[in-house]
Image 1 (cartoon, rainbow, N blue to C red):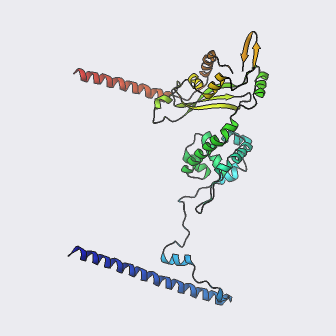
Image 2 (cartoon, rainbow, N blue to C red; image 1 turned 60 degrees about the vertical axis):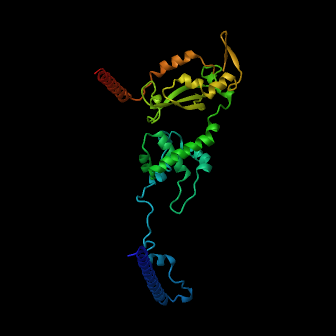
Image 3 (tube, helix red, strand yellow; image 1 turned 120 degrees about the horizontal axis):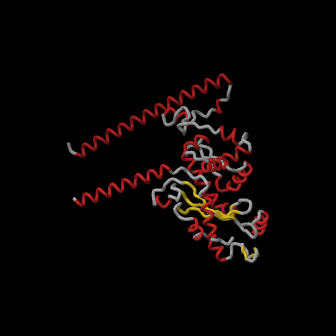
Length: 343
């Protein structure tokens, strides 16, 4: 049989099938409309309703009859989650101690933070679901940052999906950096800080500086650079605080292997101190020594390292054991390669 004949036969079958389906749908539509009209007439005759107000079958009824929509409303989500814990327990029952213990801030501070972030975080509801409130979005982010919980665990706690938790954390963190960091982490009134430290016994002091290691998961790229001297993966956070412990300058992101002194010398704070533009040129005499405000002395670093050794650090035995095992494997391979080459 010629190809053209085969194609023509196939097209005829397809067109015939379409015609049959079309006729079947039209017949179903007529039957549906007739039943709906009959039902409406029966009801109206019983209730005495004016038939001139009848509008015939609804579009949704016709779509149901044709199988285009379900008669029962379809759920968008496979699993319903509960937000009762957040809505009715945390917001309404928790006292200040519970807020401080779990969110690391008072409820009043939390609400103020939400107000400041609201213009950037507020979302519109969609036809599929209501948007998360700003308060809930911020709470999810704070909970994840304060607790060593997984995204799934946090999602179950707040009645959302784990992907929602990840998005909330990134959104809140980004907006805090963009909108609030430069307003909150700032030097402020220098004289008030100097007076505050003086009252504590530290004359002409503009701040207290130190570094700390923030534990992280080992990154895929240059992981060895993030293993600090204690043996675990970390990033370095350098912070300057005032007499009340409030941050006035921060620098974060250096790999844990980098020494605190190097972090300090490469920070914007160090450059501004060297240029004399961070603190005012205010000097006092201690004994016969002239002392300006937050001069950095190398001897302080030695003492700081000695004191830091007294603080408990994360358990690194597993990391050290893995390193020893890796060393033994490497030495065994090296010996094997040398022996094979000799043979």
